[in-house]
Length: 499
Ligand code: FES
Image (cartoon, rainbow, N blue to C red; front, side, top):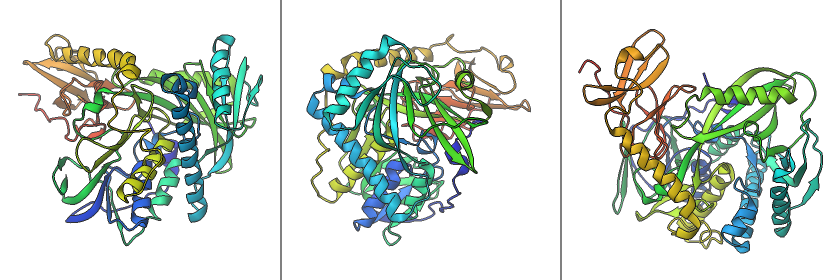
């Protein structure tokens, strides 16, 4: 079973599910860092807010993140300078720095127990092939006043060619932070509902959001769902990827404070430590792939572990988990109003989502209170950037077109239920239907339509998390068909396998 470190150790919340019809100024879908920070800022500015979360607060991608906070970015600041321009890269750096500062301020103000601390961030190359990347990133960091310096060795036992160290970045427990912030939303203005998945949004002068047992009517909606729910053209410009993480106790030695990013290694992209019950844990993150496109998801965990054991004396892997991110075609997130009036979205965060989530909330709080926001044009959700997006756009959308060919007969994993072993899932061609078939350990067959409820791509089995994952836009479903994440609003259709 996969279990995130943060989700496992943070206290349960226990918010009720929605059982009535209510009206608010702002309905927020999703109670991760974007949704809860938005709820906090908006409720404290006097807006009536309802947060609708399909599972638990911080139980989605936020609870599966690294807990690292930094002004630098996954796709490299110098790439933003060359793809966009120096001014845009400067705005990205300054806006991200402002978001880290806000997190720190909130932690201090409300004494949120989430192990927030300022630490250095490192980027290193193990061979000289990526030295140029380090040098360019060093110059970019210096361009925007970040306190950066070059190193030729690290305080961890990995030999490097070059490394960049940026001071004054930060780490925390993301689930503990979000739960702590949720507890400090203005109780007069904010209601949070867990286990309240939104399965329909009727758009209008007043938007109506339906959950299984209640409705919210709201003039404004924030889709704080990592990718917008429903169908938006924007989904052709953001691409879903999964990444893997393990946490194991350090049996000997100490891991220094800091966030360590490797430019080249496939299986130990990011390293950090975390203390729990006087023990120090090593958290290792890496091994990303397009959603629904891995032959063997479990293999990513095994590779992370083998790689980490080469350098560190570790106990058993106590926690392993995976999380999703959406890469934007032109390198920047989309934050702002959607083509649907007064429905706001925030997506395309790549692996930098904790800070972009907080930044999105800052932008939404200003927009919905009629205030100027200096970052809003940088992350304009309605931008059209064909030149900057062309390469990624073509590559990713040709792949999506190929996925649609899987609706044809003869493209499934199996032709018969008997080919599905216990504990395994396969797409089966059966009587002209495509079925997503899982056989549990007791031999019982769970059968669903294999067509994703979003836009009818064929889903794929994820053997590490026992889920059905859609390679087109990243919707993921439980073995009972319920939506876990992604743009899909409806579950996979149940099928009687005898029919
Ligand atoms: Fe869009 Fe599945 S997520 S078709």
